[in-house]
Length: 246
Image (cartoon, rainbow, N blue to C red; front, side, top):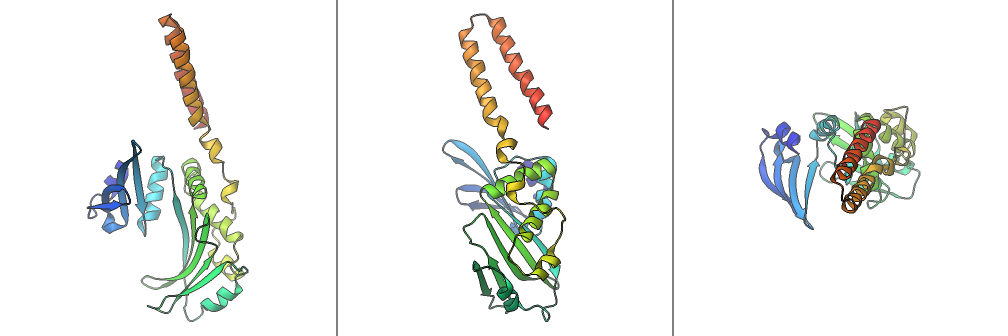
């Protein structure tokens, strides 16, 4: 978390709390870093929203910061002429029964939701008013989808985000014009097509196993020289495999 603090520490840090996590909000509240002790273990939480999310993801990828990602949102925003955009017609053209149209009473715009909010993938299309009018398509990935996307970002870089967004768009029930306007990649993939988590983390349990084997051998040996030899062998094997994987 130190690299995150260093990046945003000048942007109005304040004490804050999220669930059991005590920490600080940074960057006018759009970044939260906190920690908690749960079941005797120390856990860190990082939440980033708004314009800082993209920058933070790139920073995390460059620094190769390991985390267990619970949710990741990918979005593309394009300029829109509201006089030419018909939210109701777009909604009616969505080829699925799992959809919802919600009106924003404050400005009269509407959001089109596809999928179930509790599912691993959830989509929303809505008007975003910044210094002009924009249309934003956003995909929300949760649980194992979020984790495998994040781990593949560390493995391949942030370009994975474009491919995942495109893969979700290709398989979506939005009308053709939406797919054409929001297309960003020629290599759309689904989370299930990414490098499996089991392969990315295959060595985690294996090193625990090796360590246990080493300890068992050491306890059974009276010769300190042999014990030292076993320890050196495990360390050397660890280094060889790490260099091969990375």
